[in-house]
Length: 287
Image: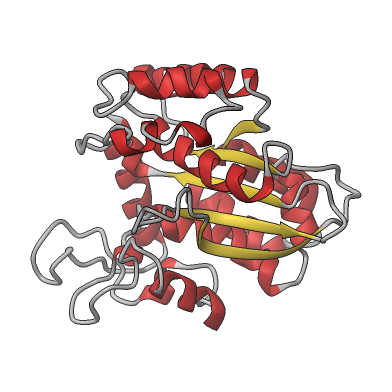
């Protein structure tokens, strides 16, 4: 069983165990992998400000109302991100999840807000600016202004091939002057990425460029949060993440990776007694 099928089978089994009858991507048509109602796919309903963020994003996660929305898919990356991070926003306990993600020490209090689908423009000449899945804002006095998270779930193992880095980015020498290793790396994945299978490095490079423009190299940390699978696909994904990490760290970029399974198990070990319902939901569904 490949990684995509493993994740989908696990999530449809969770739905069946939860008494949720799934529907297809077109309602009665398509593979049954969508919850009839959005709230059935979430630990808690979307907060008004979180819903607004997704409505303003470019991914169409909350698109048309007459068919299931993307976020209603049990294998949705955005739903998983909401299930992990929104809880801490709703309880005003953002430093807890920041520490669990490895951004800071457990006793750190610098983090004060979580935003979804934020954009950090790379160049004013571009009409489109990439969305970063999760961005934790820190207090103004902190040297690190942002903790950013790129989240990946089933899409890393799907049949759809990801794109490379468009040549227009390489045509702006001023944005690469302090990251020569990332520039050389980016040349190899532009305009097409024929090397990486599960990791989408062009997306991470764009996040680095946008965050660096606003906060300089030392003003942010970037986390790649991904779902691990068994076998060759999981190993290859891990190897690709390691290769990318080694490149960006040569240029002084604060980047690290973490699997969802490791994050959830860490929270189960450290936080179960204080947040039992949250931990129970995550472990039963995603571990």
